[in-house]
Image 1 (spheres, helix red, strand yellow):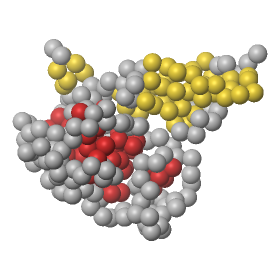
Image 2: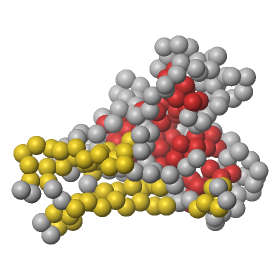
Image 3: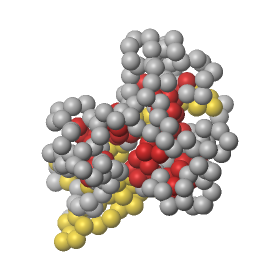
Image 4: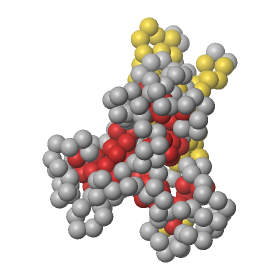
Length: 259
């Protein structure tokens, strides 16, 4: 028997540390095919659970499977080190975001604004924020080919990222048919995007003094705090409505995916 009438769920333990661009392949009947990252649980799909360190594969075939990934970190004496290929004059070596910037640029999550500047304090749009997140996840292919949002331009740099976050429940936009592509993303929105994309959940109620209980981002802020993704802006405040700068975004991603 090589095929079943039902879709099976294969659960694979996997160490995600220092890995990006994770892809799965299936070899069956002398043919190799790439599986699709999706939460549909349909045959030929897979999903990643970085929190539990598991990969779920959905299939109706008994086949040979392979996992590929990019290894973007090296370890020396217990410290994470990266080879700095780009020198930005506005990224001090001792800044909290220096390693995160190196990692983001080396792994194609974002480039500098020019050859010598990263602009760490510049704000990001919602389109840029979800694109950074999508790239950090390995650019999973969306199943949709058209956007439900009226302000999304087909073929734009963010197009596939927006399709993917929309179909995976990361964000539903503004509720008026728009995504708010060019609106500045704030800190509350960014941690909410991340928590939903990673299927995270806070295990404690501990959060920040300026995060209202029951707000859409309350659990995401608590999740970010307990997982070391963000400790807020000081004074046990999260700064929910503050603009999320480029340095902050790449640091949040770096702390989740690498540290």
